[in-house]
Length: 151
Image 1 (cartoon, helix red, strand yellow):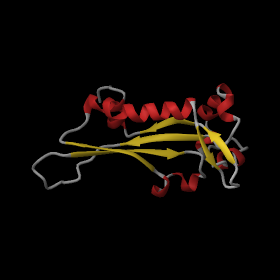
Image 2: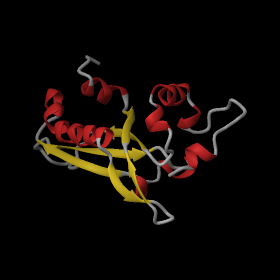
Image 3: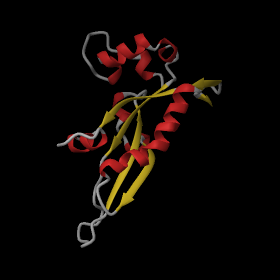
């Protein structure tokens, strides 16, 4: 979970989100978070799909994933590292109702940011970690639905 801190690119080439200006700017403005590389940076990803293409009844499923960005770039996007935070299902696209479903997740993320949690690292040392949602990975129509824009 410290790879992003210990293996930063020094040649100006972006190979990991930690090399981005946004990541560096966040670190400068939130020293308490950046001071411990074990603090978890998360990305949120979601997109709805219809699991039953042959069905005459419309039905949609929206997995909502959290992806830890502290990992090395070659394993960040491996499905085994995704955290399925919720699975939203229903007869239609979510539209504005996504807020209702995301509210518990938002409250949990706020708690992880403000209070953190006690956990153990590889050396079995106990420490407190906080988490931050750094980025929202969406394709454009889905992102527009999340932020209530027309597409």
